[in-house]
Image (cartoon, rainbow, N blue to C red; front, side, top):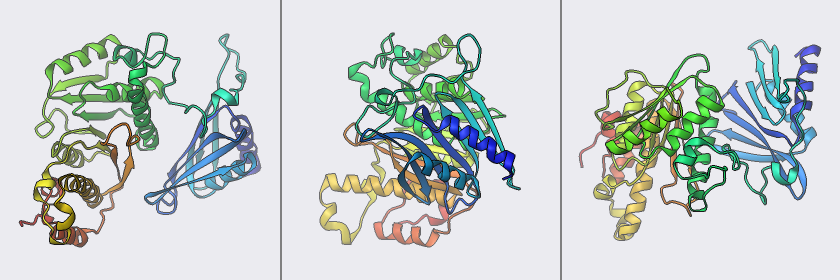
Length: 402
């Protein structure tokens, strides 16, 4: 980094690294095995401003809190050999930092302007209301107080932007889901249209939220397709999409396993698809070569009927325990099969267990490198005495009859 590049980077960080910061998202890692992702955000802890770094290393997330000077050094270190891109979102505007393979740094800053058009730094957000902290209100992507049309029509918000008390859990769920979408932004193309399919979209709270966030707020060129078996729900969602002018959001009546409406999909979302419907959705995603998979499974009855393990008989005799163990095994095996198909997978908590027992999200990012886990999976399936649908669909070489 030459002197001029250092100066430009320093000016950008001086502008953005304060209490008005929303996030700095680092992407395009140089060595994904060492550190795959990092995000920096402000926190108010015991009345003091700190910056929390969340690093994704392998399948683990690590957090540390930094002072402003430490955060400045941390950012420079990450851009000096760990990441080639950093996206900044702040009350002052937005920034994009790009690092070429030869180490050349390009800094692009877009300041927010006054209503009259002149550029100026906005007033700073006061710590008591503007920062996310452990003992203060969480800052959500879709903020309360700013009415979002689809949330109003779906009964989550009032026309004044206030969250309906009985729908607050749904509001939290929507924002949590958008955090997962935010994390995978570096895997989506900003220049060409990205096709996304939401299998089993239901009333489509999250489908509308995904479109609103990607297309309206982030200005990504996306086409989103929602698929469900309830025709009245599909008709209602299509009416809302046309009402909002969401011309690249369409809903269709159809079954996950037999859907053939497109021949190329970049991202597949499947939320609360029952039992093996999740497996069929995952198989569709893999066969399409989807870059991103986000799946929140629902009921998993298949393995509860199959599981047969002498060693575990003392605990499997309890129906509730057997059902929960089978569900956890199901999701873990799904993740491992996706690894075998070239995806880097994580199993993450969707929302707190107190709000729903179906709180596991499987996230898969296509990397192209297949995991060599055939022997371990065969041994596990033999031990448990079962063959899940995901194995039959995507890893038939592991298919074992018991």
